[in-house]
Image 1 (tube, rainbow, N blue to C red):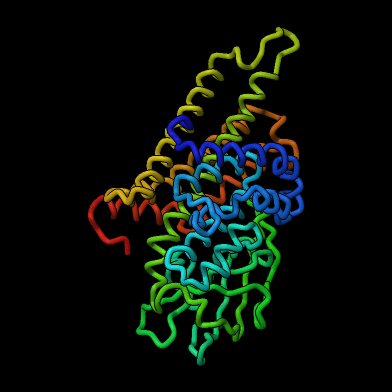
Image 2 (cartoon, rainbow, N blue to C red; image 1 turned 180 degrees about the vertical axis):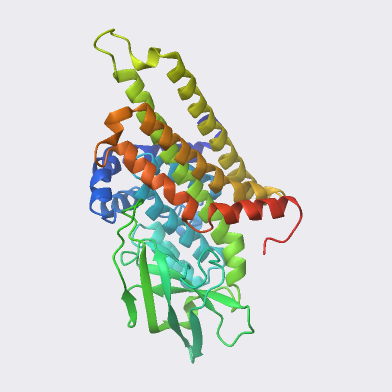
Length: 385
């Protein structure tokens, strides 16, 4: 399937794969065990010029779209899912900034991102609205040439480590139902990071709550026009986020298949000399798992291509791809646990880590249930909301 990728993307994939194997994978177990934000991974990606994946070429970036994002997150997640999630959220936030960037935002943020000197991320989710991440309650008030922000964000990936945060708010001086997005730089007065992340899976992503108390932000950090947040969420955040996550879960699924294949090749019965790969029932199971993975990858990449081409029927593909990738990752990781037997049940084995990471796909907003609902509504010609 990789032979269908554009030449430039194949080159980027090769760079990401080399980094994943040689610099990211060796630290993946420690990242998970210590709930440690993968600083080494992000530094390696920065040095390779991959932080600017979504930055336009004229600003020094790679100029990639949805296809590039899902291909690279898959390569990284095959080695370390937490690193892929951190990188993916940086890329999604970069795409949001780039969508309607002013000259100041292009020079101050996008050029710095492309140069590998700036990490950004999303701060959208809130406890009160849960999976309805497009309905922020965080307040934004205008005060001269500044805005003042009050509210609490939940599950901020890269929390406390990024240089900037794309924050969603109720629009200042707007009618009910109008929301805005803006860039908040790190370490501003009134920014308070709450509990450190100690998750079941994706343990290195530093997904932390952020309390914003009278945080002052320059008006020039507003993204687009006042009230543009819903446009950003559904035209930029949703497709890029879903593609980043679909790629990440494809990487987990591929890693699980790799582990199962390695065990089938290497495990041999001492009494008969028979290898597990010689057992017909296991041959059938392995073939089924491979087929599931290939079908899911085909859906994800087709969704990405349609999204990049602004195809009129792209939406249901994009909505379905994270759901399918998450379900495939859980299924393959679970099967790998069974195929690898007792070896997989060691404390914190690689397969057990993959299963824990895969399970996050169903609860990370937009949840699997919500995405299936939206997919059906889209296919039936109904509004998503």
